[in-house]
Length: 130
Image (cartoon, rainbow, N blue to C red; front, side, top):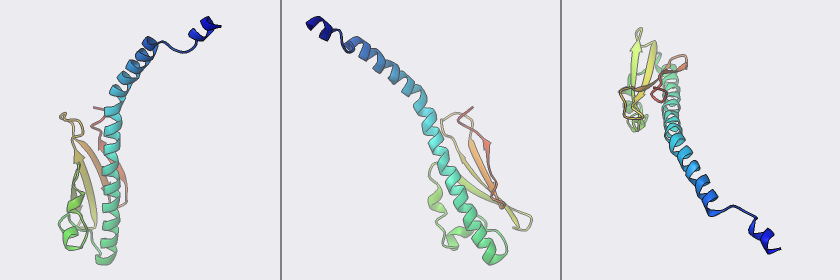
């Protein structure tokens, strides 16, 4: 009976091997996952800027440049956390493109997202995959 009880379960070595393997897997996956979470900031804030632009265009008949949002009462400056944002107007302010750019992993590639007046959100340059 005593011999059967001692054979159940895992040895300390087996548990340690599992912990080391899990640690290696987490170390490899965690940075990629963290960078994916960071891109959520750009997408959410570009969609917010797009809604501000729709509202501004509805009231004024043209789209706003970056500076206008401070005057218009929008908290544009506080958007600049990880990404930097820039609005480029075109065609007599009847079109715009807003870009978000950030270096997510300290390499030469800059992660870039864009949204336009039609609400088309595009991942122009993917810093995570490069």
